[in-house]
Image 1: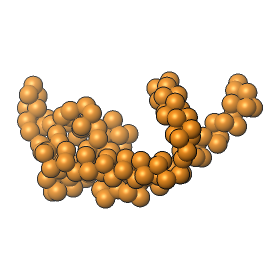
Image 2: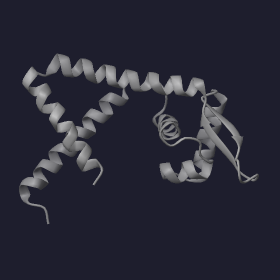
Image 3: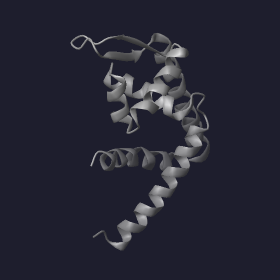
Length: 140
């Protein structure tokens, strides 16, 4: 059972991270679900639509719609599966990679500007150290 101190920190951290995440998402030009698909393909490489659905924890039918929309925008391409002729793989197109990088750039750009505008040098150093701690918690 967590201590009351740990529980209080956890509650404050969850609230602050939620607010920050929502604010950063305001910079997005591509819907969040589509960015998540592009990000998964960027991280993990070509995948079947079923594998993407499992990765994103959505129904295969929902993923099929998202894949269709991304294909219409030429952000992903489809190719034959190398070992199973019944399946196909979807992967990032050059345009999809560029769009994803632009999304990431907008998010990072806004956050970097906010850090420079709002935080002192000491606070920036503390935030940099905290990022490693958050990463450690995220991988637990």
